[in-house]
Figure (tube, helix red, strand yellow):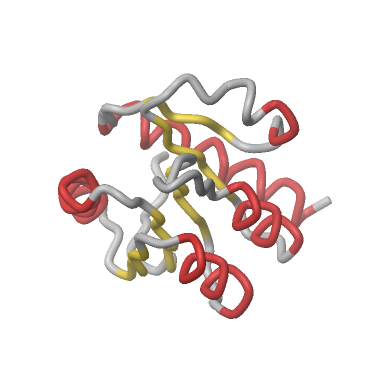
Length: 129
């Protein structure tokens, strides 16, 4: 049975505005109603440190040589599950983040849904352990 996402607060980090708009439409179609979108690493880090989220979707490369890796580490330390989104071959970059799912761009709803469901399921199992 597929979970509902309407009560889940989501942090979405993406530096490309057109991709962000398209993805936010996709997230709304999936049932997400509470999405906090940020485009810059500093704002994402602030949200990661202060915000209360049930899940984070992070673009790996945020432009200008910045990445979302520190954001991911902060979120993980707070117990917030992470899914990485990438349009580049970032596998080497993500070697130390084997605890997170990776979805390659362009995003397709079935792949994104599968990654989100698996991530949330794993987080729920850890919480119950």
